[in-house]
Structures are given as structure tokens and as C-alpha cells.
Image 1 (cartoon, rainbow, N blue to C red):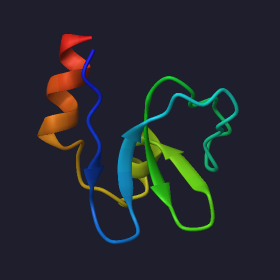
Image 2: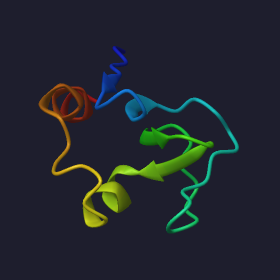
Image 3: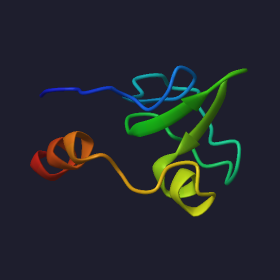
Image 4: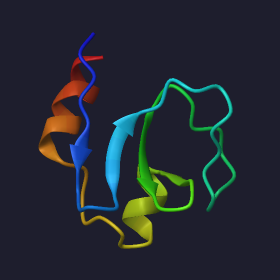
Length: 70
């Protein structure tokens, strides 16, 4: 299974979380074993919250392709 990470800016990266104890700072959902957006100060957000808060406009096509094949 291929895991892709995409750097949005110097301070934001979308990556696959293998951790067991990551929680979205917006919706308090457990975001382990899925793609997340990291920001400074250990603020992790699920991609749904990142899109709804307009941090990212849409999920990058590299991530979408991997998500569809899983």
C-alpha cells in the first residue's frame, strides 16, 4: 500500500497518520489510520474539517488517487 504525503506550504502537510492517539482539534474525532492535515503546534485536522474551514480548497489529486485505490 502506497502512502503519499503532500506539502501544502512550509507549515502545512497532508500525510497518512499511523499514530493511535491523534485527535482532530476541530471535531474531536479520532484521526488515526487516515490522511490528516498538520499545522504548527501539533494541530492536526481531518481533511473534512480542513476543507470546511477553508484551510485547503480540496483534497489534492495525489491523495485522492491513493484513497480511491484503498
